[in-house]
Every structure is written in C-alpha cells, then in structure tokens.
Length: 195
Image (tube, rainbow, N blue to C red; front, side):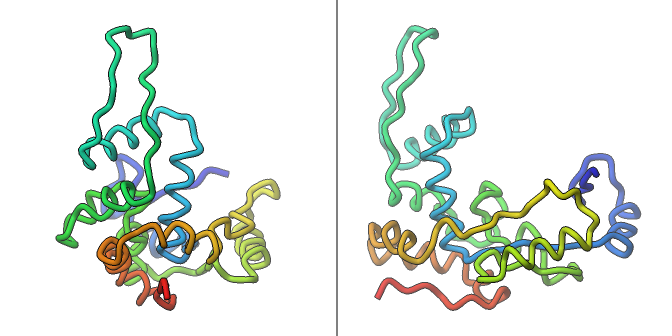
C-alpha cells in the first residue's frame, strides 16, 4: 500500500483537490514542546548525515567553532549540542511567517498539516492514553497492512520534558513556547509551564 502525499511532485491543483475530496485523511499530532524535546533527543542519538548537517548548523548559529581536519579521511568530531543551543536554533525566527523556513521536524504542526483548511477524517492525539487503540482503529479503517503502526508510546513524558525545559532561561522557554501558541490553541493542549 503506497501513501500518496499532497506534496508529491508533479501534482496539479486538480489532483490535490480530488484527493482532498475523495481520499481518507488523518493527522497524528502531539504536545508541541514534547515534540521539540523528542526531536532534540533524536538528533543526539542518531548517527546519520542529517545529524551531522543539523549539528553543524546549530553549532554555527550558536557561534561555536567546529574543529576541522585537513584530512578528508578523518571524520569531523562535532561537539555535543546542548538543549539550550538547540532551542536557540529552533526559535531563531521571530517573524511567524519565517516558521515555514524551519525544518519540518520542529515546524509548528499547523503549518505542516493545515488542520484549519483540511477536513480530516481522523485525528490521532499521540499524547492520549488511548493512542494505541486509536491508532489501531484508524489504521484498520484505512485498510493498512497489519505491520504498519503509529508510535505506541509518548517517549517524552512530562518528567523528561521538565528535565530538558528546565535547562532553559525564562526568555528561551517563553520564546519556545510562544512559537507553538497556534498549535496549543488548535489542538487543545494546555500550555506547559515550568512552575
């Protein structure tokens, strides 16, 4: 079963309108700051070219020098990125119009999935205690193969979120949280507080 995305190449507006009217549409979303913490943890854990690119960009944005070698056979060892450095990078655009320039991993969800413009058939809250049952129901309704699953647990629970978010200054925390104001309102999450 292939998944057709509205952003696939070579689609005209007629194709997109047809899919919006006739295809089953679902959105899986999660608490915004939990998503940011999860993205940071993923960047720290994965060992991929994406990690190297992101780490380099984050370090440069935070004015942290990267020691390079003149030997192309010796890989560059990047310093560890802290959560505050990551947040500085994620919140670098004050103008909300620039949020479309953010990497899709930490771009506000409403700018990716357009819930105010698309009439979704199913909404799956990945922070819901019933996410396993909700996900199974949606995938079964879609006729998805049995091996396909949505995430089964929230790996960045409130305790983990607090551990990372408490590393931020008050200004950093407010800048990060306000970046996702629209997501909080649209998806009905209560804004996370450090107190």
